[in-house]
Amino acid sequence: MANLRHRAIDTNALNHETVCKTCWARRFSFCETLHNKNMDEFFGSASYTKVDSGTVFIHDGEKFPFYFNINKGTTRSFKILPDGRRQILNFGVPGTLTGFSEHASFDFSIEAITDVSLCRFSKDKVDFYSNKHPELRKAIMDKMVSELSDSYAHTLVLGKMSARERLAFFLIKQNKIGFKIYGQMNKITLPMNRYDISDYLGVTTETISRTFTQFEAEGLITSLKASEIIIRDRRRLAALASGAIRFATIG
Figure (spheres, rainbow, N blue to C red):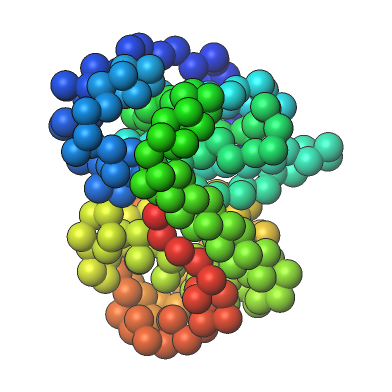
C-alpha cells in the first residue's frame, strides 16, 4: 500500500453565514433539519476544515469526541490488520456523518481520497441540542440506521457473494449515489481506484479487473476510462446484486 500522509486535523470556526448557506450538500446532511431555525449558537460551536487528498486525518484508536459531516469529496474508512492487510469499511460521500461509536475514540482510520471539506461537531453539543430539538435527534438516528443497513449489506457481500455479485453490488450502489447526489443516471464516476474496490469487496485486484472486463464483454457496462463507467443493462446488473443491495441505503 502507498505511503500515507498523516496529520492532525486543523479546524477553523464555522462561519454560518458563508459556509452553511453556500453548502450544496446541506440537503443530504443531518444538520439540514435545523437550518430553518435560529441555531447560530449550535453552528457557531462547530468547525470547518479542508483536507488534501491522500491524507489520513483520523487514526484508528484516536480520541475524537466529534462527528464529522462531509460537505464535498470522498473518503475511505479502513482498518489495517496486524499482517498489514487493509480492509476498507466504507466510502464517505457528501452528506455522510461519521463518528458513531460506543467509545470516545474512533474504531477505524479515515483518509481523504479526493480533496475533502467537512464540518466537525462536538458530540456533547449535538447531544445537548438534539434533546431540545427532536427533529435533530431523528436526523441523526436516520444516519445511524443508514450506516447500520450498509454494514449489513457489506457483511452479506463479504460472507456469501461471488466476485461477480460483489462487483455488481458495488456498481449499483455507486449508481444510486451518483443519481442522488450528482444527478447522474447511468454514468458512474469512481474517485476510488481498483485497489480500493478490491479492499472493500474482499477480492484481489486482478479479480476486480477481470470481472470488469467480463461485464463489458457481456454488455452490462462500458468503461470510458478507469474512473468513469456507463451502465448499459441496469436490470441484469441489479439482478446480480439483488441479494445485498436491498439492505444498502444511500445517505
